Figure 1 (cartoon, one colour):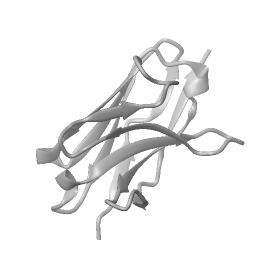
Figure 2: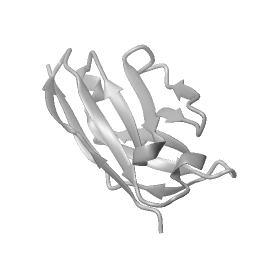
Figure 3: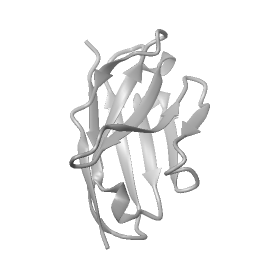
Figure 4: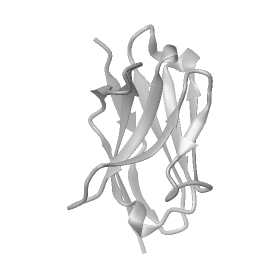
Length: 117
């Protein structure tokens, strides 16, 4: 059973940076697309970024140019480097595994990111 565990969240001032990690168990981690989502209080969950097995990346317009997703398959870990953080980035951040059918079948428990103004 694959599990994803996020870490690295916290409280930061606007303009600051955080790096989130998504650590996975399982030997087939490197063959999957891994995505980051976030959910702010009272809002729907939204897509943030994804990375393919080969390292191709895609970002939502709201984070493009500020966030960078990367992966270290040897460590079974995906990272989300978040720079120039804004109060609107405040949310619980989740990583998830995407299957070939495009459905997300494994989710982490989430990590809280709070950006103060």
